[in-house]
Structure formats: structure tokens, C-alpha cells
Length: 93
Image (cartoon, rainbow, N blue to C red):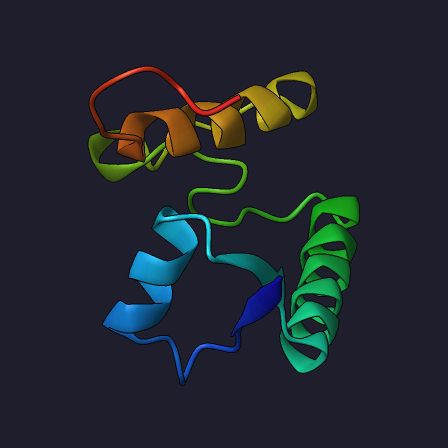
């Protein structure tokens, strides 16, 4: 099975259809994976300094001034993803 590589530049409508229909699988291009890992390290360094990052360790919008405890950071990010999820039908396995 061929793959669609997510690189931030070349995704097409046809790629999305091919993945949705099971003709292709998805992978992240190595340069994108490297960039995500570098960005994560930067964020972790900033958090280790106990600095504030909007939406990472604060609420959003009117809650931007509300600091989220370290224990709740993973839940905040999970809730962000869930709040943007939309669809119909049964969830994918």
C-alpha cells in the first residue's frame, strides 16, 4: 500500500480521498517529524522555566489569564483536540 506523506505543502484532495477509501496510508515526512520534535523541545524548555505559553499552560480566550496546573496540562491538550473533533457515524477503531 502506498503512503501519503504529510509535509505541509503537497496534500491534495485526491490524497485525502485515497486515504479515506483505504487505498493509501498516512505518514509524516521526516523533515516535518524533525521540526515537530524541535518545537516540542523548545516548549518543554520554556515550561521547565515556569514561563507562560498561551494555550499550552493557560486557558483560551477569556481564560487566557488562567494558569493551568502542571498536573492538568495533558488534560488541557486532550480537551483541545476533543473540542475540535467533529464527525458522524461510528468512531474509527
